[in-house]
Image (cartoon, rainbow, N blue to C red):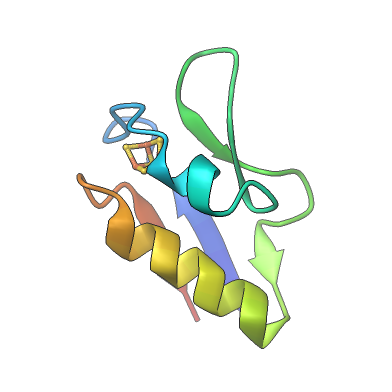
Amino acid sequence: MAEVEVDQDLCIADQVCASMHPDIFEMGDDGFAHVVDGMEELEDAGDIDRAKEAAEACPVDAITVSE
Ligand code: F3S
């Protein structure tokens, strides 16, 4: 199990996370990335890998994936 979070104070709306994995990350009306409802806690190993991939791609390290 892994918990996924986007730090709204760090996000600069680069959008790479939502482009890479729109099933996990979406851009909110506020212009910043959010974790898609129901994807805050991931069980699936593939989903966890995808969330980590997005975290690595984020230019400001706004995404954390904690296991
Ligand atoms: Fe924000 Fe990083 Fe995604 S800046 S939009 S969390 S890639």
